[in-house]
Length: 542
Image (tube, rainbow, N blue to C red; front, side):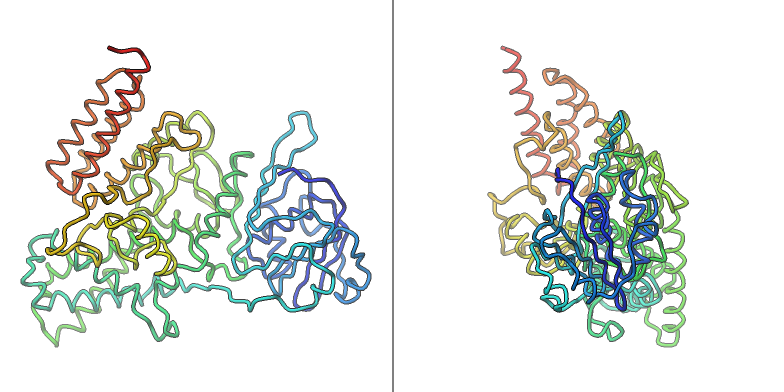
């Protein structure tokens, strides 16, 4: 967005003081952008300045011409007809006078330097959901309380990742393996029969209210500002594309440990829980825990909880899908920076592994890696689509059940793709709707912006098929061959049929081995052939 240049009176309000000064518009706008991070005091704003500053503003926020003043005195002298901005760190709100060109809650500006090259600097503003934005405010409004009570979500990572998690999973798993249900299921001898139990243990851990959370459940800790965190990281990705690096949020930032989780941390946490539960079943089987023994139960509880802690520590530091380890993925998400191959992160020791883009089984990552190799930093990420495959609210990225139910109605009866038993799976008495959507996500026949050939849209469908193959226990070689055939298809001229035929034939072959793929594979095959026929007609083929 382009803005008219103007001098701006800026007031930054803290608990016991305020700072005042007349600044240029670029500096005022940069200070507003810094509030995206949810600062609690001036020190927080200074600490985040490097994440937003450009050559058009002071290098250090501490050098800004802001004098400490009494708020009442400043407001008494404030010209209501001038452009002014108040950043209230105590009540968490931004107020803008009527003469200040309005800024939206989510806004992006391109600041351009005056040098010969005209370097562009992206500046993104994404106010936290609990911050109020008052446009066309009057001076008297600054001294009035905020319009709505302040409620800031806080999480407890010590509980989510610590002994509470290990003890809870251990208790639930031992209860199950000692039950007749475990014995009759055959889960001890057949790993595939353990999946419904895995879903149950995971769901109950997330959804059970706890006294140490004042009646909240662990799931409540996962959802408080996910979309806000994701928007900030997206803004930093735009900045990285401009200048080739990002700056991490400092770890001494106020409430850093209690800040909400972004999508990547939520998705990684899901994978952690599933890994711990699956390893727990293995231990239970080999330790003979299926034979109830009240005397041995405390020792089993202790041993299994200790094992889960060790497994978690090793898993956190092991490469994830051929790329960076989960510990790095979580840290990058918490410090609100994108993960990009070849792009340094100021303030963090590690960088994104260059191996992920080429070893990852996700067709979307593979495609983006190919394109990014010629266009600068290759950004990688976890979109969390696999959290929806069980068709259960507990694992969904939706914050509320109402939001999730609305999403399910949009997808239709087939919108919940299950990997095992789920609360939305049809019973024997129910017949699936033959006219229900095939895909879990929203699929459009129209190409995505910047995807004129429609390859990215197909990649999203391929990613869903790969996800189903992974949960069905498919061999790594099968998934890699499917990805290789999709790569060959994307690289082939539209009127050459070889790659299309090879891809559709392999989809057919996989469907025979994995029946859960049938509807998706058939739909994708149909789309591939439609594209081929359309290409033939455009070339005048007989």
